Length: 418
Ligand code: ATP
Ligand code: MG
Image 1 (tube, rainbow, N blue to C red):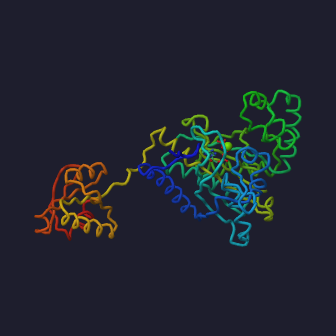
Image 2 (cartoon, protein in one colour):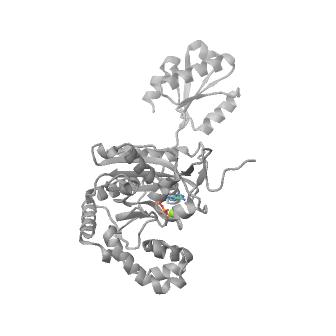
Image 3 (cartoon, rainbow, N blue to C red):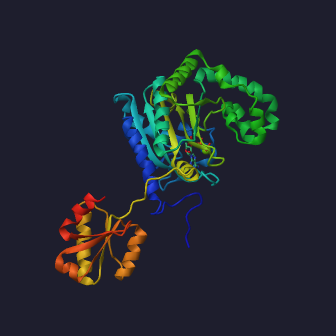
C-alpha cells in the first residue's frame, strides 16, 4: 500500500465541515475588516524566502522544501505566506494602489520539521497582511482581527502576548548588549547559538535548547533598548488595544521565528495543545518590502495555523456547527419507483435542497438504514400506490411523525419545515 507522506494529513469527508467552518470564519472576519483575498503560488524562487524570511532563521536553514526543477531553477514550496504576498505586492506595483492595501490568504505551507502534535510538514495558514502604513492603529487593527477570528471560532482560552523588537537603530544597540552578555557564555551554548552570535544575536533568544534557555533568561531585554520612536509606537499600540478591550501580556522574550519583523510582534498562545502552543503569530515587518527591492513600504500581518486551531478546538471541546446532512432521502422499490425517486431528488437538488436517493440498488430496508446513517432529516418511500396517487408519506426521522405530501409540493413542505 502506498501511504501518505510523513507529516501530512488527509481531510476526510466526515471532517471537512470543520475545516469549512474555520475557513468561513476567516473569510467573514476578513470581510468585516474589508480585507480582500489573495492567492499566490505554492512554489516560488528559493531566493525569495532566503531574502524574505532570512538566512539565519530555522525556516530557511533547516526546514525548506527546496528542489531544482527541470529547467534547473531552485524552487521552494512556500514555508509561510508573507514573502509571497510581499513579492506579489511589489511585482504588481500595488504600492501605487490606494494604501493601505489589506490582503488575506488561506494557504498550505511546507516545512521539513519533525512531525508531532501541532507540527506538520504540510499545514495551513490563514494570514492577513496590511501594506503601506506604519501607524500603530494598523498594529492594533491586525491584532484585533486575529482576536476576532479566535472569538468567532469560539476559542476563549488563548493568551495574547506582545512585545516590540524595535527598529534597525535600536536593534543595533541591543545586539551589542546581547553580544556582551552572551560572549562569556558561548562555550556553554549550542552550535546554532554560536553561529547566530555573529550573524543575528537576537535569534539566540528564540533557542529552544534547555541549556541555552537558562542562559538566555538573564539576557538584556529589548524593551530596555527601544528608541523613543519605537517606544512611543509600542505605547500607542498598547493603549489602542486597551481601548478595544483586548487583553494582553507584554512578554519581552517574544522575538518570533522570522527575520523580517520590526517593532510590534505578538502571539496568541494556548496551554491546551502541548508544546506547540502558538496558534497565531504575527508582527510588523517594515523592512521586508525594501529588502525585496520594493521601496520603503511598512507592513504588518499575522498568520494562524489552522491545524493547531482545529486541535485546540477539539482538545477544549469548542463546539462545531452540526455536520451537514441530507434534508430528505427518497427511497424507491423497483426500477419504476426508483426512477421517480431519482427524478424528484434531482429536481429538489436543482432548487438547492440537499436530497439523496439510492445509487446502490438496495432494498427499501437497506435504503432506510443508509438514510439513517446519513442523518437524513426526512425519509419518503415511493412505491406503486404512491406513483398512482402522486403523493408520498414523508417521515420526520427525529420524531417519527408522518405527513402525506403531493410530489409537486415536497419542495414547499421541506422549506416550511426546516
Ligand atoms: P513555532 O514556534 O511553533 O515553530 P513559528 O514561529 O515557526 O512557530 P510562524 O512561522 O509564525 O510559526 O507561523 C505561524 C503559525 O503557523 C504558527 O503560530 C503555527 O500556528 C503555524 N505553524 C507553523 N509551523 C507549523 C507546522 N510545522 N505545523 C503546523 N502549524 C505550524
Ligand atoms: Mg517553527
